[in-house]
Amino acid sequence: MYQPKKYKKTDPQYIFEFIKEHPFATFVLNGDHLLATHIPVLINGSPEKFTLYAHIANHNEQYEHIKNGKEALLIFQGSHGYVSSSWYKEKNISTWDYSAVHVNVKLKLQSTEELAQSLSNLVHKFEKDQESPLYFEDYPKDMIEDHIREITGFWCEPLRIQAVAKLHQGYEKDDVVSVIDHLERSSCPVTGDLAKNIKKEHGI
Image 1 (cartoon, rainbow, N blue to C red):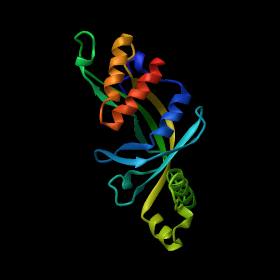
Image 2 (cartoon, rainbow, N blue to C red; image 1 turned 30 degrees about the horizontal axis):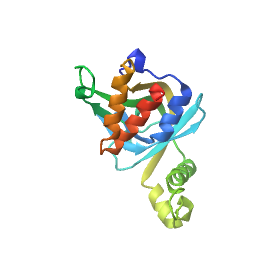
Image 3 (cartoon, rainbow, N blue to C red; image 1 turned 90 degrees about the vertical axis):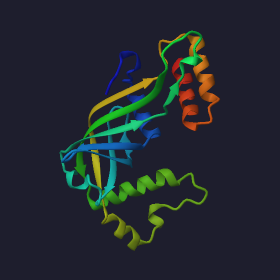
């Protein structure tokens, strides 16, 4: 990952919360060529020591390369957006603000029981705030058994963790405030979240 010093994030708490808040990751590994899939990934543990876990469909091209000890890369992407040079007091270069966490991991296959628990955790995380939640345990037993046969779950032990948040550090306050204002007035919800991140970074 490209990590200029002023954008680099090393705080374990920041990284832990970032992964929790952006669980839909890009899962990359090397097969006959580089392969990538977009999947939800959950985190378990503490900021100082955590494990990640996920699953893929068995008909996914990556399936035959999911093996114990295999190294892979998980990319967690935060809010991002284009920043126009026209938003500054003086002419400057347009840029793109963003945040991301990369985690190189070692894979370990899950047992059927571990996979079932992982799926239960996954459904609960995203179902609990629904008006009428339907949890994994509420599914018909034969539906669960049929589904589990078609997917493979795996643990992801972190080997290397890198994080970056390019949020207009080093710019004059007036320019930062202008960037925030323009992003907040955008109709894109992603840039609205980016504005919140810039505010937090600068204590505005």
